[in-house]
Image (cartoon, rainbow, N blue to C red; front, side):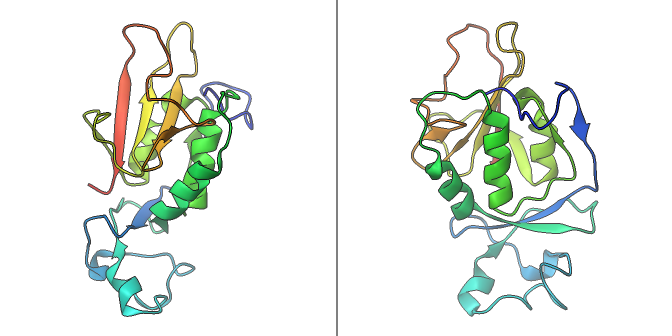
Length: 192
């Protein structure tokens, strides 16, 4: 997948405020609510004010960018649900758009985002992802990888792991969608 066609330039970036993130997943490492700074629209007077049950409070987890006064809650189940809703089996060349929309449906708020898939690394780290060594043999739900641009694929590629398969703008048979040699991969995991 190559480009989010809402913009015309390959290297154009849309700017706004930095983003702070909290994630919610029963499989994630938990952080106490006291470490959470939240947007008043997300939570009222305290980090747990908007939570309805003790179970919800216990499942509130996060990794934060402390440079921001805004917060988003990332729901990995919604990210996966959006990936699962993609039914195509061939690329429409809009992988960056598909992954952005899956992240936004899960609660991510982007202060800025690039057009080219290859340029998404910094944006992922701003919303709480950490770059790690590729774990294609043991991917976790919510993992995202990027293939850096090549001469043949000038926008690169980005895909997310649904828990059972890699999905971009189509359901991939595996992570190695480009058959070129010498590809450079970046691999990201949320909330380490």
